[in-house]
Length: 319
Image: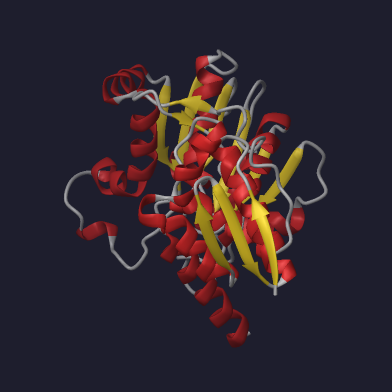
């Protein structure tokens, strides 16, 4: 057993590192297998040498988050722990250093994980980017944030968001209303993200002017999309033919972002996923990049990460 002392750079950070009722310390003790004794602004870490080093590294990264002026969430704590356990070094002070954009409520949107930072940086540098990963990794939300940022900076003159209207166990024909009413529920996550970024009034105004368009993928056929930021969401539910159709819509001055989760394909049996096929066919094209997010990049409730990991293990056993 070894002992390691961690002392924050600023004593004012100690209570924030403890967390309410020492919640953060309890999580670290449970996940890292160490004992942490706190006195004033000093942390005494007791345990195996490697585990005490991990705990000190976690505390250092969490203090860097605090120093950026952001609140310390449970997700921040668990992410720092996961990275330390896996031996992945990262600089929390630089993570999400530059925010992507600011929501209508004034909240800055930043990358919260290393994977998300790679995703954002890749979008900035390339014309076409595929963001592939499980639910909760911020694929769609960050994509919409990047689109809004480009629009506000006048890098593009319009935003086009699209999804394949694939029935995940429900039948469109049984839903009330005309075709637009039937497909709107499939597009709701995109509407919600836009409302967060722009506010309800501005979002509606841009929709009415046609500056922002949210439509099913089928509506893209036959068009050439110039000077636009185009997002294809839920791309795992495209067929290879639909994916090819979408990718060949891209015009001059445009940027395209394709997001999807290849573990949640709702296509009928026998239908190939256009996203999987694209990852195989297009991987070596210059100016087009694939970014793969993992369960470690999940920014929802900690249970979501555990659920994803459990399904991944079950799938590996099945194979």
